Length: 171
Length: 138
Image (cartoon, rainbow over all chains, first blue to last red; front, side, top):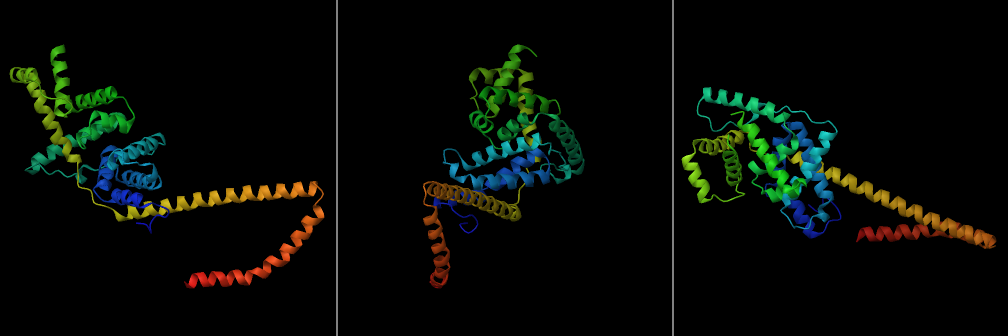
C-alpha cells in the first residue's frame, strides 16, 4: 500500500487498506449503481470517490464509519455529475439478479414491474432516491442520512415518506 | 384516507425502518384496521421487490489501480506546484537583495562575488557527483 501512494502515515495506510477491504468498495459501487442505474457512470464515480478518499485520507479522523464517509463523498460527486449533466440511466433489467422468483411467468411479470418502477424512479428527484437507498438497502438512521446528505432530519423523513408513497403506487 | 389512518401509516413507516418502536396502541390499531394492515404488508412487498436492485458486486482491481495512479499524479502535480512557488519566492527575494545591494553602492562587489561563484561552483561538480554515487552505493 505504501508503494502505491507516497507520504502517508501508518494509521492512514490502515484507512487506505480499509477503503479497498471490508466491503467498502462494494458498498460504494452498490450504492452508486442503485443511484445512477448506469454501469459506466458508476465505475467513473467509484474511481473518483477512491481518488478523493486517498487524497483526503488525512481529513478522516475516524469519528464515523469509513463507509459513511465514503458514501458522503459518493453522494457529493453524484450531485456534481448531475449538475454537469453527465447523468443517463441505462441499467438493463436483465442485469439485475431476479433471485426470488420461482418460475418464468412470475419472473417476466416481475421484470415488467421493475421496468415500470425504474422508469418512474428515474423521474423522481435524486435527493429522495438517495434517502431511500440509504435507508432501505444500508439501514442508516435518519440522523446518519441527515449527516451524509447535509439535510435536516425532518427533510430526510419527509423525503423517505414521499418516495415510499410513489413506490406504493407502482405495486 | 382519514387523518388518523394517514398519521398511523406515517408512524408505521418509521417503525418498519427501525426509527420508532411499535407501541401497544398501534399494534391494536393494526389488528382492527384492514387498511393499515394492508399498508404494513405492502411495505414488506416493496422491500422484496426493491431487493432486485441489490445485486452482488465484484471488486474491479482496474478501478482501484486507476484510482491510485490518478492520486499519485495529483500528489505529484501538487508537489511540483509547491516547488515552483518556493523557487519563485526564493528567486524574488534574492533578486530583491541584489537590487538593494546595488542600490546601496555595492554593485562592484556583487559582480566580483558572482564571478567567483561562476568559477568555483563548476569546480565542485565532480565532488558532488562522487558524493552522490557513494550515497547510491550504500
